[in-house]
Length: 154
Image (cartoon, rainbow, N blue to C red; front, side, top):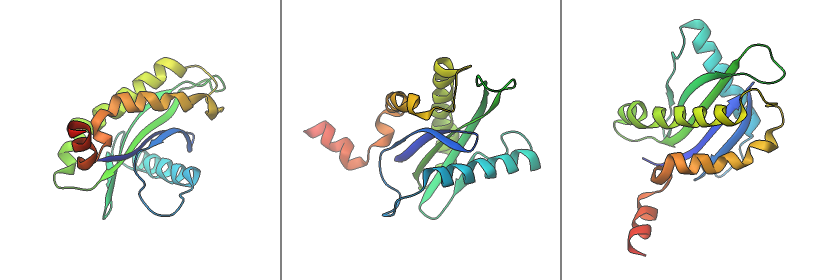
């Protein structure tokens, strides 16, 4: 399975994301998508329970989520931090999400919190270097089969 995009959301906004493969030919408004994903997860959490929603499945893609709380300098209480990954929909995707993707997303949140807990999270330009953390965590899961084979043979 190929991870197309991964990112972190806070207060309905995209803090940082890494896009490895496009999901459509059109430009997607990242803030609009971030707000929608945050609203869906907040609804699921308040309507059902914590961590009630692990992924959303569409016709071609699946979006997996995990979350935690992070303290920002401008808030007395920790707030919701969401990690997401968009990947190709394939057979047995649920098992792959539970065994592989959720662990990777939790690791991304852990590393992000180690670097930025208690800091100003409103200035998103400071997070662009975090994309290399995504690259290290995800490894070959961002590559298509042909890209993996090119790396082996060439």
